[in-house]
Amino acid sequence: MVPTLSDIRAVVTDSTYTYRQRVAALANLAENLLEPPLVSPECAAALQERIICDMFEGNAPYRPRYLLPDYAKALVLGSDFLEIPPAEDFDDALAYLLIMYSQTPSITGYPVYFGDLDALLLPYVEGVSDAELHAKLRRFWMCLDRMFPDAFAHTNLSTVDNRVARMILRLERELLQVVPNISLKVDPALTSDDYLLDAVATVFACGKPHFINDVMMRGDLGPDYAAVSCYNSLKLGGGSHTLVRLNLKAAVLSSDGGVDDFLDATLPHFLGLTSELAESRIRFLVEESHFYDSNWLVSEGLLSLDRFSAMIGVFGLAEAVDTLMQREGQPGTYGHGEAADDLAYRITSTAAAWIADRPMPYCDGNGGRAFLHSQSGIDLDIGVTAGTRIPIGSEPPLIEHLRTVSRHHHLFASGVSDVLSFDETAVANPQAVVDVIRGAFASGMRDFTFNLDSNDFIRITGYLVRKSDLAKMPGARHGSTLLGAGSVADSHVLDRVVKRVVSHESSPGLGR
Image (cartoon, helix red, strand yellow):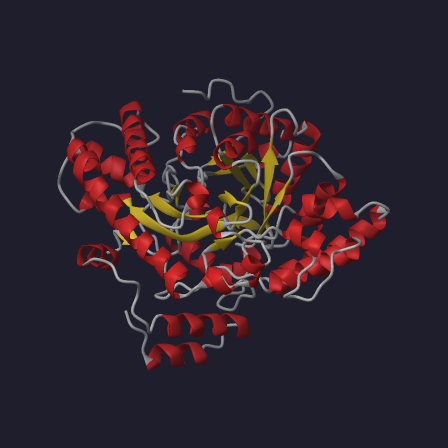
């Protein structure tokens, strides 16, 4: 829909926006006055019907969705564009990073990646006392939340225990901030239980960090990767041009065929239209808006076009499976029946094979192909389940839940996530949580995310909002709180089945 003067006036006069939120909203309206990148009438119709979705990225892509600059290179070499010399000490490193973040775009208007901050800062902490480290990093951490108030801004922590990572976890428990979102990379041999226990205790306090299967990620993306935004993993020095997605539920409902017809005809048809949409947006970004010809991050070698790809997401798997099972007259639903779970895997593996076979321009970061992505949903998704998750409120017991979803994870190199909600028994049994994480990764999970039911933080999809911030609505300092409010109201994220975790409950037998 083309914006009108009334739409613009509504933003200008809406007192619930902060200044920065108002400017971003006005910029989006201006962009959407333009015609979108050209696609076929069939693709445009599917987009209009929201069977496929452009994530409302805007009609004229002029910045990639996700950027992962090589901040370490910038700290070592300095920047001509920013007129900063190489960092010589810890204070330099902190200041230079904040300067670089202020000049790093993304689809949100804020950087979605702050770097693997413990690894970035470790070379500069020699001679810095623990007290100094705490004081300086605390101020930096507060700057991240106040200067970039968006829960999609993300950092990673290394697999190996170190003093900077430990201080970050401590500060997270002290400050209880929304920003940054955090992922901790886990290697079964390198990541100690003591380090994981500290991270688990931090989740109990503030819902962070996520946990990443580092071995699986390195196998798919190579050693230089990171998680950004919610939990989307991409190559360092590159990123993703765009993210488009296919509503599997809507695709099934678009026809009255059974399983074979869906897998042989309907699914490939809509994957083709989704890919067409992605290609049109990529070509506009690269060939017409010329982002990669003009941005300082590219000219200084912190980003490289050949490290970029694109993401084609799917969601609504649960509803697609359940509808097809009913049409075939078979019992069982996704997460609650072997036949339904097998059908779910047939759908995701078919989609993965199709996407892997479809060339995509300017996607050398993944061999000229897009990544298949399990898309975690947006606030407008009503009556449809995020990604490959089991519907909220119908989740089976812990081991069965993990066994069902982990089966799909190897297909989604750029990200797949399932949110588990634990009750207070977990607090008394942190080692059991560590055992569950290790067992889940050993059985093929790519990302592991859990939330404690009783703290102030709500895990929406891959990002967090605070219950206390929701109580302040309609005004909110974090723009992501506005999105979270919609999900709380319409997607029942507070109704997740809460799991008990006790000391004897580790994770043998997850494999399938």
